[in-house]
Length: 329
Image 1 (tube, rainbow, N blue to C red):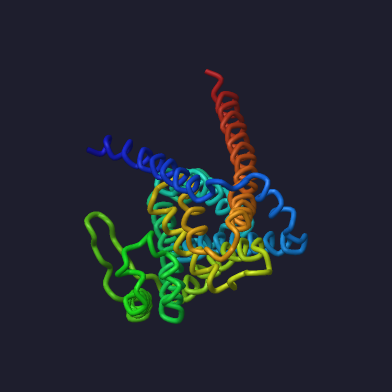
Image 2: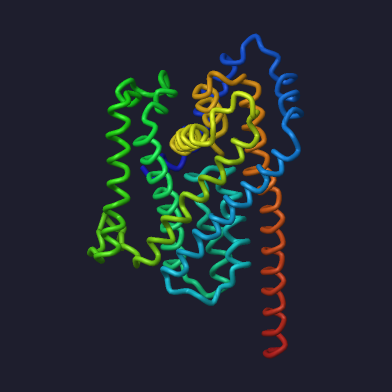
């Protein structure tokens, strides 16, 4: 059964990409996509590219904070910010592109943090807490959006069941999402007993850790959404709050689809949700997002992994030579 699931999720991701690209092709039928997108990319002012770049730095700084928070939860304080930032950046740059369900980042984190003395159990807790911090941010921001702007979910009519795009239902869903966050916060403050779910043990973190999560989790999503906001044209721009709402829906859809990097699925939801903007301009903004948030970090991360593994290999070789010198027999 497990072996079948190993094949099922990658196949599901590939199918999601193919279906999304087919639907995108229908959306752009009859349009000069390549020419219009190039024109839209050239029309983005240099200062907007700069702001998109700064938003990228905010997003990845928040992701590094995820790791730092998890290490504090484990009581690990001897690992410096620089090492944590590089490890976090490399992990997320790879997992965002390859797909979170295919490559969770656990292997990269284990290779990095084991060199600093962490064992497999500690790395597993770190990965789980980082994943939950992201989930917490999505639920928190999603809940706020649905409570204060429930009509935003109507942008996804045709992609979601009508019951979910109803304003009243959307607001109720928003309150439910915020209730989850409140229960988590109360559990942390009152030190609820750990929950056992099968072999998984859910332990509420200390209040100071929980408070850090509440700030770090939304910050990463705000930064990532900011990249697209700044890349969209000023004329007809729906505003940051709308872009954030659509980003949360699109990014979540990409994760659920299991498509590598949400490829195709992310774009389809975004274009459907912003019908008043020219499709080519929306696609151009999404290309800027993929370049800044995914492709450039991926290229840097690959170099970091190669240099790290090369250094580890050299250390292993030197240790072997040292042992031979001590014991020539």
